[in-house]
Image (cartoon, rainbow, N blue to C red; front, side, top):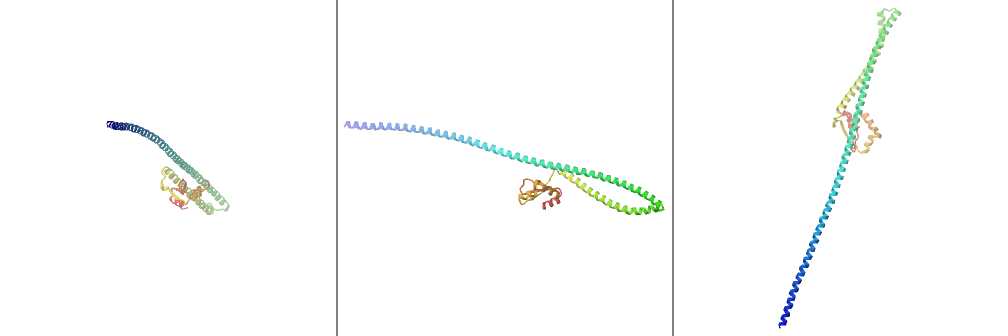
Length: 267
């Protein structure tokens, strides 16, 4: 009986010892597994952080590159626009200078014509004096040949000469009057145009420009013509300036005379 009890106690003790040992081993195993899991998680977290840093740096470089490209594109566009505007301004300045030079030449030509006209008038006075001298000689000769008195001969000769002189002088006066009128009107127009051009060179307003819509770009090309010849002809015929720019299907008509602008627009 005692032996059986001792055996039971031994078995129970062995079970208890085995359970305690199992618990210790299980705890050690769980502790070791937990530490490994924590270490793995920390490594994974560090890897994710490092990968995030790399991605952020790559994204930063990408955005920086895109920003630089956009800045370069905008700068190139701005420089191109400025260059085109400078070219257009230079072209307009050259045209204005050319117009002023042409007007100056026309003014000088008118002044020369006035001088020539003055010379013609002086020559006309000389001719009148010569006629008077010839008339006196004819009167003297007629008096000697016909036996007329000086007064009678003068009256006869004056009657004949007067008829011819009236006709010639009337014709000459008509020509001079027409010439004076034409040159005076031309000079007035040119001087007025010169004054308008010089005053409006830096102050061109929308009132001097009319836009004309075209059905298509082909029509614009036909208006321009080869080497701009059609533009020159149209400007000469209408008395206005045609402005061709990059605006699609549109041309501009520039001129100080609204009637001429409207005629050119309808044409």
